[in-house]
Figure 1: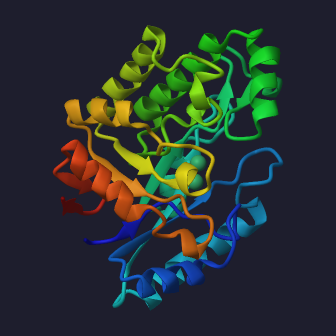
Figure 2: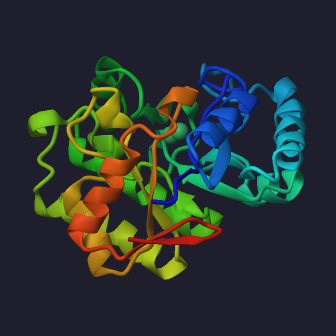
Length: 279
Ligand SMILES: [Zn+2]
Ligand SMILES: [Zn+2]
């Protein structure tokens, strides 16, 4: 099976080790391709993005490696771009400004619809406490409104920002083991997912099966879960496997298991932005 990974984080953002460590590890593991996808610099202080002052180095280093190792592996320069309406710069500015090969669009921070106040940003990818407090403080405890705005923001991202890949599209489920926060089998939830998937099908976005939640022990299923992957299959949406590696040793964590799951579900191909792999 041809291996690749287009979702990786180095010490430039919230991963560890250098970009070169990732490239060397990917070559050792026999990968055909690796995509470098650090979190873009954001216009406010945080713990996970590439810092503005390091951004030119990130780009220069990635380009240097792409050239240096071109006979051994295909290296693609990318970013994982957060879409926060009213706050994040347009994805096109990053693509054109940096000459990116591709980008992953992800939502980790949900802006309350109609607001542009940073106090109304709900962080879905942090601690359980922060997650629950956000629903209380920003949405007055209305979980459905909070989760719907998460999906609507992704839909808006797909339609207006046109990422090549959409990252971990049901991450809002991360803290929802056993449906303890909301009922993921409820009709409203399925409809919110359907609206997003319709946009993904329309714009040809690739959905990644992100294995990180499982190998870190945070979740029992990959992002997105089997129900949503089945809906992707029914809509002919293109899919791929990524591990969201934050260390070179995680480059292929659950890659084979993810591929096996896609095959078992009936997918015949995986698609990256640059090539496809038959299953
Ligand atoms: Zn992410
Ligand atoms: Zn990531």
